[in-house]
Amino acid sequence: MIIEIKNLNFTYNPNTPFQAKALKDINLSIDEGEFIGLIGHTGSGKSTLVQHLNGLIRPTSGEVVIDGANITDKDVKLSSIRQKVGLVFQYPEYQLFEETVYKDIAFGPSNLGIGKEEVDKRVREAMDLVGLDFESLKDRSPFELSGGQKRRVAIAGVIAMKPKVLVLDEPTAGLDPHGRDEILGEIYNLFRKEKITIILVSHSMEDIAKLVDRILVMHDGRIVMDGKTRDIFKRADELESIGLGIPQITKFMRELKSRGHDVREDILTVAEAKEELLSYLRRREDD
Image 1 (cartoon, rainbow, N blue to C red):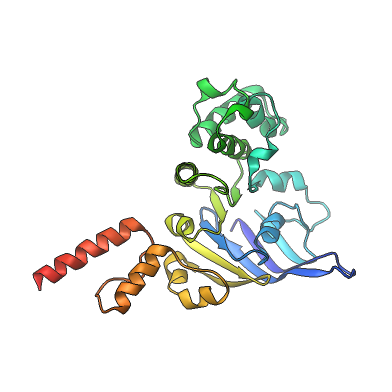
Image 2 (image 1 turned 90 degrees about the vertical axis):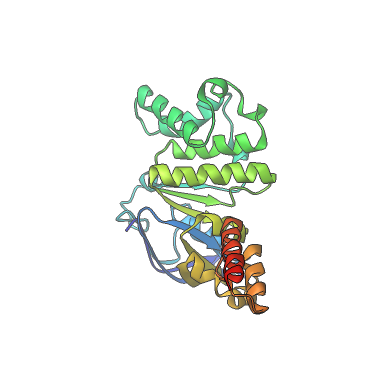
């Protein structure tokens, strides 16, 4: 188990007129190698929760244990926790600051005190994992790149730290459809190749449906659903009651089912829908 959270509570501005309880009795276990989607409407507590995972926020009460280390212990080194849990915020390209792509990606691992050869190796590997060509881009200013490339440079800088857990908070925000697809493809390739634990925070039900194996649903500071992706999206009425939805293709298949067509309604992607509809048409022809 890479992450274990017990009875986590967090309150902003405690004992003031602006006090607000953001997290309420969160209990959660995450195993190594899971790909998890975290969804919830704005203000549900998603960002507050993920900021606990690398010690940016300390609990008001409860425990957050990362790879055996409790972030509330006095002796814990937060630098060690942050090396294990890489957190990529929305619009991470705004945090780029070095004069070259190479230096920006190398910044994190260089601060770990490892040798230049290892840093160079990590930069090359990280750039490859996010689909950036090393030779043509390493000496370029990150500020000259496209929005999607900047986003990948920022993600590569976190990957180069070799975290055991990668948390991505709306990694495709603000990108055009092509840029979104590229980033999501690289994230999935990273998961497949490196077998690291990934937590993807997203408002896009389509993105979540394509990628993750397990979904956590947050509402009013609590985890109100936790299950396999297909099972969670079967609970469309419950999701809609808390301001969320299901993928458009899932909604389409549910509508077909309700009109008497013998099709599966737990479809998550267009590719699955195509296969199911062709199968349905063949069955009708056979009849």
